[in-house]
Length: 174
Image (cartoon, rainbow, N blue to C red; front, side, top):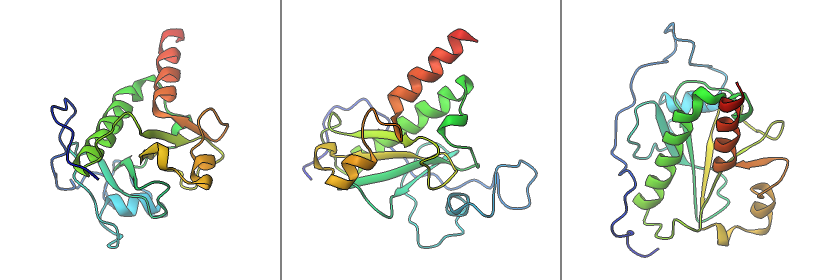
């Protein structure tokens, strides 16, 4: 795609090494050896290239079955349940995940941040039970199947913004 978007105010993805927190054998409970995403985040799946990420508690990598020219996953290093398990105290985590999603698109020279889709599969439609944000761009180039899988206002996909609204509403009613 064309060059980077000029004058962007989004965070710039700086490569950070993967910290040791949550590694197998540690007491923090943030690692599940049966979870492929836990193994990826801890460098145990050598076939997955981790992309630049400015937060040490998050990782980003390309989806193995891309639904768009740019399709990335952003997830916490420590095992975290699916999006339905999130509470209002997870809002900062969600905000960081969204910031990383936008930053990785800028890093990959995606210039139109108005033509993106970021969201989560809503249970029971999750293939992996480790919280992961899908970042797709350009959304206008999703194929037929991808338009169904990442469909707005469906029972199986919720945008990051919709989830954020849901969590904020929960915090005001609690």
